[in-house]
Image (cartoon, rainbow, N blue to C red; front, top):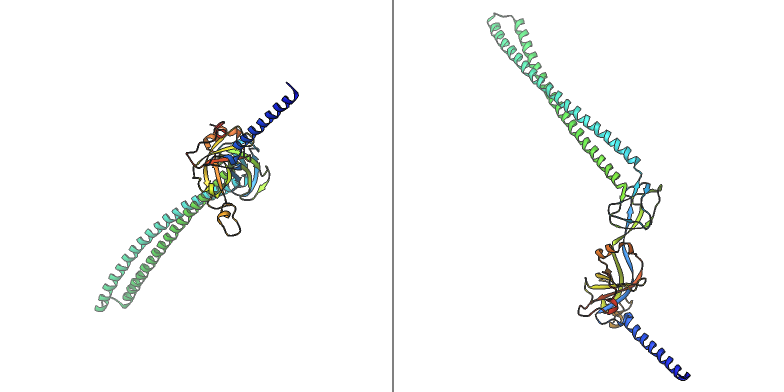
Length: 356
């Protein structure tokens, strides 16, 4: 083959490769998506959870390091509880004191009731003595009127009757005092029982604080940051760890008005990460923002309204995340594609490599 023919052949091959590459680029670029499918770039995100203290205290131990996977309910940090334990012992002693006070108050009630019964018996005795003194005074007066009894005897019997009347009044007063003492003793019982309830509530509060001193993971996830270290003293609400909930992973991306307005909630989506472009991750649209992220400062003409961008969220199913939990990473950039027309088929490049 002559040299000119070789040159023409080489030029033809280069031209074919260039044309083929151009058409391939046209097929693969986002702008070449068929009508009914839209795409936008974004990053993989996940729900972050701060593990914080409920009350002020010193960190005794942290049982998880950055990057560790933790399960729901796993103990990941422990706070110092020496002071809380001392408070609980004090509250338990107060509870015992209140129980003893209730028993003492009840015995006082019993004693006062017995005194009241005795006072009532004295009243009956004094009333009988008064009745006898009254009858004797009446007989003495009759005898004195007929001259059969002296005036001295009449005066003595009258004085005895008045003394008996006074004794009845004193006995009744003693009975009333006993009744008042019973009421006071019963009030002491109520106060002592209230002290028991207060002491029990204090113990329950301290036990709740002790339970909160053991920090547990509320969900399964991965430790992203250790915000504090053992030995540090934190205020109430101080952060100890930051977890990433790997059961709630999504990609946030933006679409213009024309496309975002046609995307329904629950629409089928696909995610392609820059790090692993050969894999296509299925997802579902869980959010279409009802407020535009970019709004023109001037009056919104028909042309300006096309510049409005709406935020969408493509959420990966928790079941799929659980199967590949060790490979889940947040912060990775990529592309999210959404199909807002079910009649349109996904392009081949978004069908091949679909993760299942």
